[in-house]
Image (cartoon, rainbow, N blue to C red; front, side, top):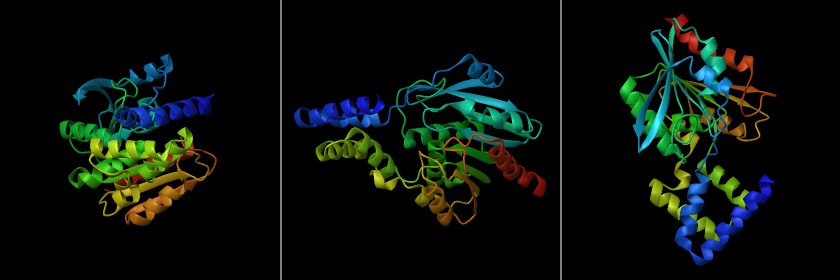
Length: 281
């Protein structure tokens, strides 16, 4: 059914490319950048309500933020595509709240934040605004497109880079997203050209600019990369390439945990890495 829907949308975009190129470019770009919200359940809300909640605005959207703990060490959590802050429940519960103050945000179009649209530059702007308001962080923990956003943000704004950056299951290149998207929708060369052109006008960069290994070069943060060799969404080779470009990083490859890396072992890896700096002090 999903493939049929994708194929139907692709046919529509290809049709528009012939009769209304401007509409095809805009529709194709916005569809590419539109997440489908994960349903918020009572279980999700119960956990989220355990934290201190606040909101702020950016680009006309209301962004939901959360806070747990009262420790001196400050950590920021950045979720991935079509996810929200609940994905960090195991980590929030595992961190020592006397040592850590834990912050998290729902990206635009996700969780309890408003919006229907997300790009890495937009997510990065939200992170930048939040950090400017709340101060710097000792550790940033990120997953999937949240990881890509973290790498881009601290490449773009090295003054905001944390002491520790933990990157779970990162994508590698924006071009990989485009290739998947083009293949799933079976877009015509004309449609692709129109959408890429709209992307470059709207974002101000070509898709090839957005490269996680490039962003990792010269990062000052101590890094931890965790990636599963059976990740069906973001190949493990992404983390190998990022690790090769990031001098101050450690790479852990797991097996059997998939893209979401839902495992107590992964939580332990993250806690050991984050706590090491406390012990070293």
